Amino acid sequence: MAPDFTGATPDSAAARFWDEQYRVPRPALTGRANPVLAEIAAGLAPGTALDLGCGAGGDALWLAGRGWRVTAVDISASAVRRLAETARARGLEPSVAARCVDLAAGFPEGDFDLVSAQYLHTPFELPRARVLRTAAHALRPGGRLVVVDHGSAAPWSWNRDPGVHRPAPDEVAAELALDPARWRVERADSPRRRATGPDGQSATVVDHVLVIRRSEA
Image 1 (tube, rainbow, N blue to C red):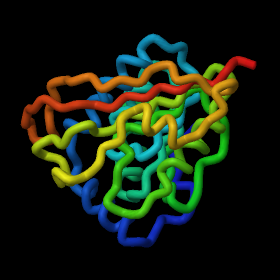
Image 2 (image 1 turned 135 degrees about the vertical axis):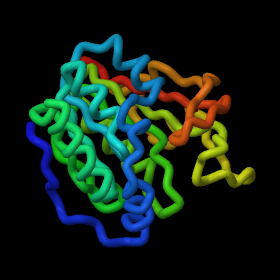
Image 3 (image 1 turned 30 degrees about the vertical axis):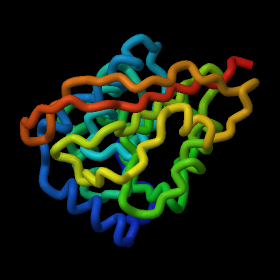
């Protein structure tokens, strides 16, 4: 599964905003996976994965390095292009498909053993519940949807508005309105951890973690 750029490059304020965020390479971000995803995926047998809002590509590269076949999508053409280049340089090209996709307008085709939505937040309009519900339906039997949201604002965050509501995991699960006979909440908690920002800053942050598993039947 070679890196590609399937789909038209989005041309919107959201695409331009995120393109600017990823225009300058940040080696620290491509060199590591988000810790909660790494913790969860480390215990899973490799299969097919979908990385929603892949950004700098740390998660996709980490998964591919452990045997997963990854479709990684982002609205930022810069992020997608750089991920494809890094996958090629690391010899992971056959395992990573990097695609430019505006999730507000469409969703990648296919079915997956793992769908990851790590900090899928944006200052622009995004039907997030619809995106995550579609992701749940894209799971293969026994597959998992892993949603990790910001439960607090780090000093380096683009959104430090103290008045913003950060939905708890059970709120997110309720909003998806999935049939409990077909999708089971496997984890819903809000752990604290010590995080390191893109420029080496350090702070204690809260993650809102939701893991939903599709039934085997």
